[in-house]
Image 1 (tube, rainbow, N blue to C red):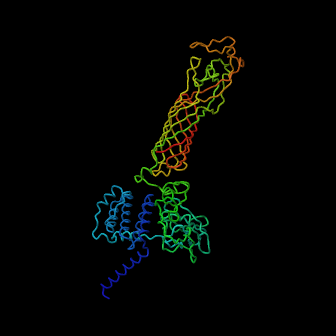
Image 2: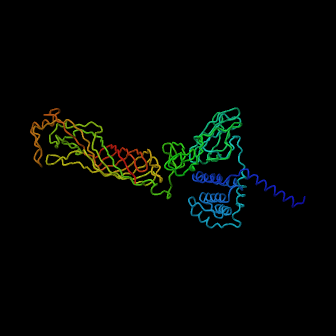
Image 3: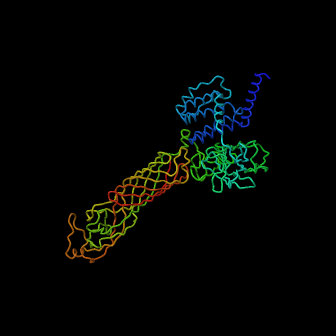
Length: 589
């Protein structure tokens, strides 16, 4: 054989080797797009730049000749975004964009993830000659770079060899682990969740077997999983994948792929309800994930109609368990919209008007509160008029320390959302049940009750209730608050007073009380009094305050909520401490 023929045969064999390598991992356009979306929306969005690029290059490699130029171009476009926006690598982004335009001259940049620099690089990248064919040399360069690093080979081998599984179907698997293994743990999670679920595999002969249940395969999307073999001390012996680089399979509505099963056993039955045979005309096409609906019967199996959209019943405990950031009634909610895509009707109301009722309780204590040297914050009354008697200095009214009922209030409120978890609120209103006026003409000190209430406060919610799509407004949420304002609180108590005046008539206005000798002697005696009177004592607290508190909000939808809160106030300049529970409703617009 001549030398040119030898060289030609070698090149042909080399090309056949690469074609065979790529064909073994070929995927469809639908599968490729799902994996691209997963790399961007899950890995890149969570700042895992390296894994996002690795997955995108893996999609390009797996596509080979099985994907359309449009999909290959889209994958390269996102590689450019990851390099440019994620790493600020303009040269690497330009190389990826050239490959994208070589595959698909009409490829469009995803402006949502592109920085200004990336937009400039994309616009300045020309369409290379021969564009429209398979992506060029950059692909092979990336493949060779990836192949240059030998990945460790895991001794954990599992029977799950499918790339896509029909939703609502249990996924069994059987794994073999290296010697020294005393337990095998399967961890998995759906792309819509951030929480990993675990299943302890059971020993069965020389294998370890287990199953991902139907409850966790309801939702269309990418299911990531990894398997870890541990020893008796719980230390890792070996593992197949990990949380940073897990194995993946696609959950799809239907597939031609064989259902997963344990070795030499039939696949377990699907959990989908059996379709009833109907010889009549076929009904309308059932909605897929995110399609509009009015009833669950209009959605595909595994989906329910929630808030007008077909969504998955993905269980959760906190907002952080859901990719949407919304866990409502232990189910991950599907966002109605985001940012500028939210129409006026779908956005969370930012202005809330309400009405609230409040009761005040004040901490009250003191001695000699009706005596000559009493604190001027105390006002004493006898039969509704100012007390003008002269009490024995040792029996001038003593108040045991404790909270006493005080004023009541009716308040109008306005709350304005300033972020997803913060708001500012103003409350205006009137107070009732304050102390009577201590008229100077009747011998009083001239004090009277201020019935007005004005307050401003800042509130921080424990959940993001003011999400753009309004999903956070439903259900319970707690909050804390800080504020201040103007108000007066008048706690009231009745105390016995030892009276030393014989004549209880008030003196003429402007004149001092003139005591008889026996009255003066009574006032300074240890235990002499002429009579004992029940005197009403009001403490004038305020008329300003600073406050803090906690509260509970329950949303009955996007536009109505019940509010329960407790304010703790420090009153100024007449100092005192009060507690004010309040209850009300609020409507959003």
